Length: 612
Picture 1 (tube, rainbow, N blue to C red):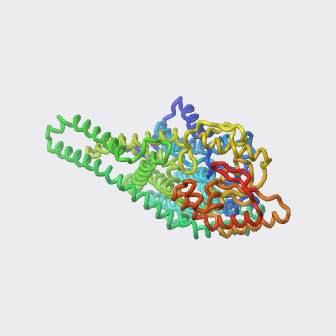
Picture 2 (cartoon, rainbow, N blue to C red):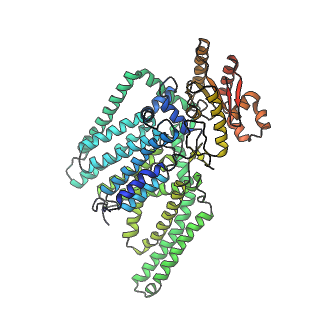
Picture 3 (cartoon, helix red, strand yellow):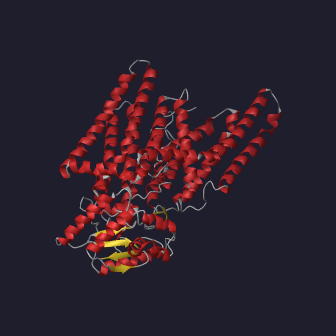
């Protein structure tokens, strides 16, 4: 079997066309949909970066992402949602191009496999590019993996140092990136593989030397970045903000390490329901072809007569297996929601991890291939650590795992010689085809909106500067148009706002900076911190500062003013009422603030209630 790096990816004259497609594909939906949650929330933090309008925990735990995002707001055309979507989308473009370059130029993967892998990776980027702390993390993580591979296989100290710089920098992009330091395991394993091959007895010394070069880069990056924070804010402010990050797990239990790891394990175990059934079908084929090989060894002429028909029948069985999976609801055939890619995606991740383990443990596999297999294995696992979104982050970060996995599958299909293994070939191809179809359909349809998919993106609003040219549903367009007209008539642009009810994006859409934190109803925002922020705001108002506008989601306003009975009378579903009631403590704090400063309702529509 051809080993890694033996054959460089073949250059083709139309490669620039593929690169242009990969570059522009992440920008396909920059005009599509509005999201009241993450998109505008992050752009508001970029636009109004600093402790005045941001919570210090969020500022410092994702500091570099906020700093880079703030820089983007200064660029031409960045004064609109479309402009910011364009600039942040380019980070996904760079990731795809970087992955394609590494796979074709350094791993020797065929151009069409690398392209297909990057296309799939971009199609599965469900997360809005506004979440720059994710995409900047992926960019530095991918860069670190590439630099580690080059530094170890080509013995380049500068690459190892730069890999350490990437990891150290990533801690300031998102504090929960700390577990990425586990990549050092691959460094040590490779050092011992190299020592075993050279038989020079220097494995331990080599591992220490490689580690020190990586550590030097890691420490250097942290030294520079913490030095800047000390000069800009003071380390006491940073420590206090990060300290609150650890304290938030008292209520936001899904951020606890045990909870995150448990969720990951449960997801893979739960998906074994499908993996085992697929495996059982394929196992029958393997046994059948193994028996055919036994007959052939006995010099039976039967196999020679029927092998064509048997192989054709087995290919039909594999196609039938895919049809059965669709029939049983393995994945949805509507592509505007996660149901289209969740099960196929988890199964693909399981396949990737399994292939990595096999290649690492298989005798005769070159140390370079063991290294990239180990790095991909760690990439798939570590990407989801530090997030409360389960395996979804790993599905969003397949820029190396996708082409690697497809490459290994196609090598197997092309080169496996044993007759028993032939049964695996059409099964692998059929399952990959299912995965490609689902990924492409999802990528061409799904637009993030409140963690689900945007629908009916047919209408634009003409009275909102930020949302120029953005398509949304007629219902959302009506909500936005009405409140935008009111805010414009009252000259509210630039006025501080207190938002509550899962509508943090409105700070950005209305160009109204948050008085302290645009998403204070999140579990990760401590109730005691909200109480302190409201008290400071009240004191500032009493001292003569203009009072902030209060903007509430309509159901939260009904609950605050009339209790659960008001929501029931309005026909609100009991599950929604239950979620609102989980914020009772914060709602009482906000109600007390409104009563103390004698706020009254000045605007209301189906979605928003404004109080001044």
